[in-house]
Image 1 (cartoon, rainbow, N blue to C red):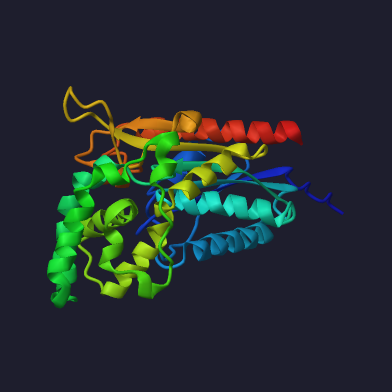
Image 2: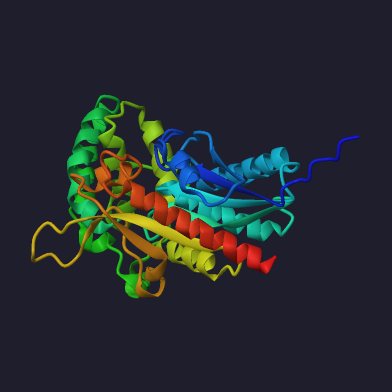
Length: 339
């Protein structure tokens, strides 16, 4: 009788999670690119199926964890240990980060024979959206969205337009200011649909909503007002600035999990400006080492945000792939040293 083939010791599973209004094609050929440059023989890439980036954010987190459990179960005979790395774009990085924390809360057996090694995020607004982006790019896109929404809500067109303008006109109220920002933190609006009106877009809370408005307007969507509310409910997690800080602190403090975030950075508009142009709010000094800028020559912050995985639009696409695999290799090495 032929000798039974020995089961591989490890299987590296790279899981890609799209972000706000993304899809399972968000990453284009990037997963295959990583597999090509991977130094590991037994590696598999899988795309998390398209999910609705609307409604309850915590539900999206739980769904991802449950799906990961199913993926592990399907592969439990493929290797003695399944090493999982999450790779999330935009809000997908936040969903992934919360999924890691949820797995930690559930205990070591939450994913069976799998080990969750870490997270590589791409232009994920861990500290919410950059106020400069909101105050410039978002306004033009918000006006486009307002015109679309007016078709469905004509009686409130004036209020909607005025609110969209007010969101983009108040960058000082919604900017990220690092360690001193707690004084401007507000209590997040409740996530019941009835509480989500255009008034929610104003003031400090507008940073997340304005980013969402700009993002939706870019696609020139034509959806119901209820759909817009649901999308804003999903991104409302970005309005909890203290929660944003706490999420990163918890991820960075995990001894067995490695965390890194690449973010798109555009050239300064002039020689006077001291801040780079970014979609995400930049991190405070204590976590800056976890964030890596990727130069971009895109027209604006949204285009830079959405073209990270387009080799013809992101001239640093191939470098991004190599740097990502370098980080993954470090995750794997750290895990295997411990085991």
